[in-house]
Amino acid sequence: MLKPSADLIVRPNQSRYSLVVAVSKRAREIAADAENRGEILIEKPVDMAVHELMEHKYVIVEPDSNSKE
Image 1 (cartoon, rainbow, N blue to C red):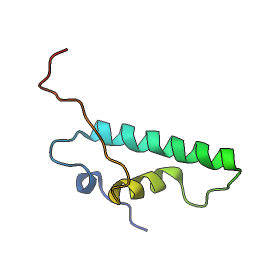
Image 2 (cartoon, helix red, strand yellow):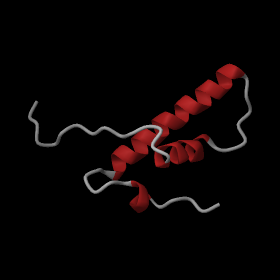
Image 3 (tube, rainbow, N blue to C red):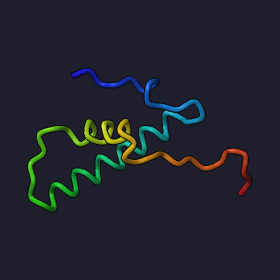
Image 4 (cartoon, rainbow, N blue to C red):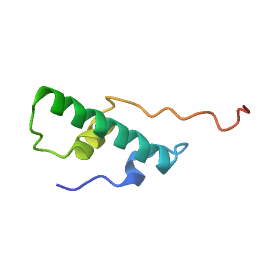
């Protein structure tokens, strides 16, 4: 299976860093849920997280870069 390129997933106003953080966070959630249920995952959690992102099952929310704290 071909994996999607980050260029195809990242929106124009989005950083690659936020993509990596979001996908890794979701992958950890998937792995933890499977472990709690006693499931053995056939597909890798990162692949599952990427597919979920592409299917719009979750979105990446970035802070506004123009706002001052």
